[in-house]
Image (cartoon, rainbow, N blue to C red):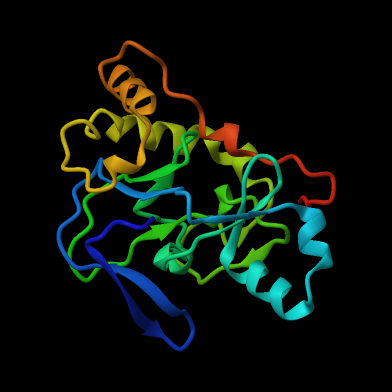
Length: 200
């Protein structure tokens, strides 16, 4: 489920629609949580689908560390890619804002940690990276882990509208990580090492 203080908005012809903040979302806010309405499909199920459904899945799904396709039921599926993303996923099936997000600003993910099946050339943002690859998690997880650790302690201090979707045990673990009692699990735990991935 995507953060409630967001809306779907047309960005441009090149990009299409995106998810935009309607209110200030401070760094450390949980911006998305995998919930019970999100759908999970195995690769075998995907292969048996009609082409029209496979095209939709290719566009809107990410893959978890099991290689299964996850289709978000709400506007979360419209979050666009950026090499300078303001949100990052964690090893705990939720994403957080790694910097302040202002009203009217898009919420963005780096698709490099979403286990894409094929490389794609992204919109040029004057960054060293120009292409998103299926194995980006292997190559950049240390950078993303550092960005997460920089704001993870803020989770317990921010207002969290999506907290009700987290199990009590997970929230306790978040508190322990924030207080330095437990080490944060690496984002690399999300990596799907599927044999059919296209690597560099």
